[in-house]
Image (tube, rainbow, N blue to C red; front, side, top):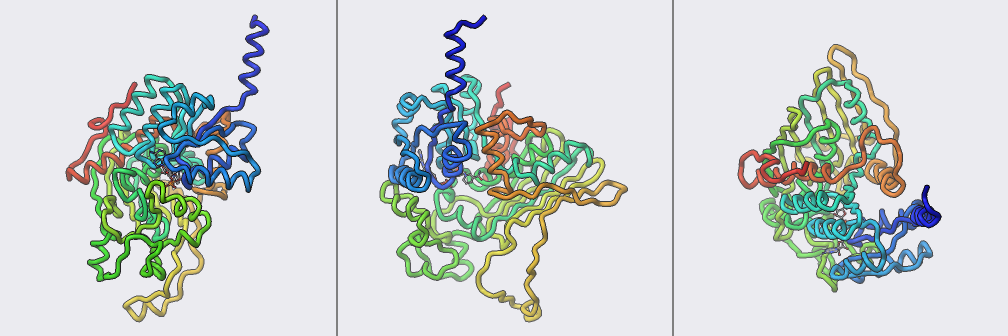
Length: 453
Ligand SMILES: NC(=O)c1ccc[n+]([C@@H]2O[C@H](COP(=O)([O-])OP(=O)(O)OC[C@H]3O[C@@H](n4cnc5c(N)ncnc54)[C@H](O)[C@@H]3O)[C@@H](O)[C@H]2O)c1
C-alpha cells in the first residue's frame, strides 16, 4: 500500500501544471504562447522565453500584458538556456527559433531531462538530424514534431481512405504544391533565403508535404533524385527579364514604394514591433528584396522518390505561382484517389494584360473550385469523399494540433501525433533531394542517416 507521503507527492505532481519554455520568439511562437495563455491555461504554464533578441521577447511580454492581462514571463538569452531550465523548473521546451538552431535546443533540452516540442523542420541537414536521433535514444525523452497539416480534416480523411484499403496498395503518387507570390515570395525576403539557415524549401517547406506522403501511404523514403534551381527570384533572374531598378531592402527605399513585391514593416504595427524595432540588436532584416543578391535556395524543384513500400512519387514545388494550393493523386491496386485544394486562387494586382488580344477579352473566373477529394475505383463510378470543413490556420490543423500537444489522451487511430522518427523521415526526403541537386545522381536515405532501432 502506498504511504501517505507518496500519495501526497503524487497528488502534488498531478496538480502541478506542465511548465513550458519557448525558444525563438518570432511570428510562429504566438500560436503556442497564446494557446498557453488562453484555451490551454488549465493544462500548462508558460514559464520562460529564450531568444537572441531581447526586444522581441519584451515586445511579446508587453503585448500580452496589455491584451491578455498576464504577467511578463522571465526572459533569457541563449547562453542562459541551462539556467532557464533550472530556475524555471521547465518540463518541456517548445522550439520555434530559426530552423538551423532547432537541434541545439532540442538536444540540450533532452539532455537536461526535458521533453521537446519542435516546429518543423526538425532540423536542416543529416548531421544535425543524426545528433538529434542519437540524443533522443540516449536520453529517452519525448520529442514531438508539430506537423499541423496532418491534423487538417481534409488530410486526415485522405489517410483514413487510404488506410481503409479503398484504393488497395498505393503504387505511385503524383504531388504538386504551389506557393503564390505572397506566401512563396516571403521565403526570399529573410533568413530562409540562405540555405544554411533553412535547408532551402526542400527542407523548410516540403518537410510538411513529404511528411504527409510518409503518413498517408504509411512508408518511408528510400531513394531520392531531383533537380532544383533558382529560376525566378534573385537579382540575376530579374536582370534576365529586363529589370534595371533594384534595392536591398524595402524600408527606406523609394524604389520599393510601389513595388508589389515589397512589404512595408513600418505600416504594419505587428511587423514593426516584432522586426523593425528589433533589428538594431541582431541585424535581422525581414523585408529584403526578393530580387536581391545572395539567395542560395531554390524556387523550382522537381523530385522523384522511391519508398520502402515500393511506391514511387513524382513531386514538384513552385514558389512563384499565381495561386496557392496543391494537387495530389494516388494510384493503387484497386483505384485512384485525387485531392485538389486551392487555398488562394489568385493574388490581386494589375489588370490582366495578356499579349494575345483574344485572351484579354476573357472574363476572370470568380468562383474558384472548392477543395475536393475524389475516389475513383477501378471498374466503378467516381465518388466525392466528404470531409469536415474546418476553420483556422493550415486547413484547421493548428487548433487540433494544440489540443493534442497540451491536453493529449485522445484515441489516435490514424497515428496523427508525429514523433522524432517522423520528423527525421520527413526531412530526409528533402535533405537527399538537396544532395541530389548537387551530385546530379540519386541519393539513398540510409547513406546519410542511421535511424536508431
Ligand atoms: N508549422 C507551420 O506551419 C509553421 C509556420 C510558420 C513558421 N514555422 C516554423 O517556426 C519557426 C519560426 O518561424 P517564424 O516564422 O516565427 O520566424 P521568425 O523569423 O519570425 O522568428 C524566428 C525567431 O528565432 C530567433 N532566433 C534566431 N536565432 C536564434 C538562436 N540562435 N537562438 C534563439 N533564438 C533565435 C529570432 O530572433 C526570432 O525571434 C521556424 O522553424 C519555422 O519553420 C512553422
